Length: 39
Image (cartoon, rainbow, N blue to C red; front, side):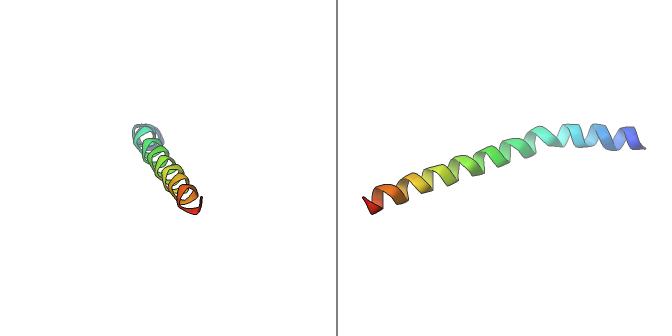
């Protein structure tokens, strides 16, 4: 049972990480746009 939980988490991890990276990219993009608007 423990090993199946572990493998499930491993398969979910990359997709989850990708989502976080996309969020970071969007945050960076919006921050840059905000800076440009301020300037």
